[in-house]
Image (cartoon, rainbow, N blue to C red; front, top):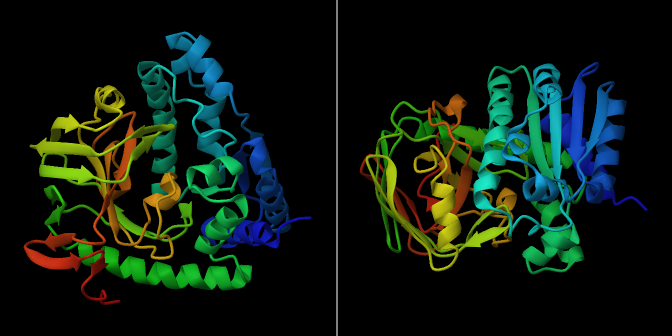
Length: 372
């Protein structure tokens, strides 16, 4: 029997996130484990008069490529994929892995080659999104693997995921919620857009980030579902100080714990971790990886726990995340890298953030509501 929450989520993505129109071409990409949501999305797109098509991504293919492929094969990008990204009107990426740790033992150097190749397609996609030529949204379908990472039963994890997306009641109620959320986040982004510098203070953290002239973007359910953050790309040469991440930094199944970074003139000049230090050092060797590509406030207070999945963890209400590597051109960012690694700084107990010397955030919350 079909879970009605899956049907509502598909409707929310088609009606709100993508605003899919009649005659538009939409690519639905996801693994076999996500079949229920992919099928619901296909049906919802057909009802809207769109032209959906499906790409099933089997688990294990990247493992074979990284273990047995040559560097040339790993770096290869199909001309079909390059053409496809130019022609699509919309795309939904459905994440739903059966094994979230499948790439843990792969060679980090070879993995960085694969990331670099795929980042080029990603940047072109974001270019088209920025100009309004294309829409994209990423969403997760709950599986046993993701539930295990979150230390929850599958039933509890499903409730967590669908509640965070606000599809407990009806698709109409979910759309209304995200439209209201969009208004509040847009107001906050406009307010932050007047700032020249942020100073982030917390346990073992005192970091200054230059943001003058950069555009803050409200993440309101159009790029991710669930959503709930405001973000920008910092000035590439104006990050100074130290930061400590108490949540594990996770990348492609690898966990790096208790990461500490020191920045000078915009670059990481010292990095250490209690576990996974070799992975941290390897990823920092990727071109552009030592520069911040993103600084963001997590503002979804219904996401209140760490689940080892960045789609949810970066939105935890009361946290900030800062990403090493690739920046967002639509925010004014210029840093180019094969890496974009979000790391979450928990500021819910002792954190403070100053904007141009004025305290604006304490213990995980802004001190005043933005002016609409």
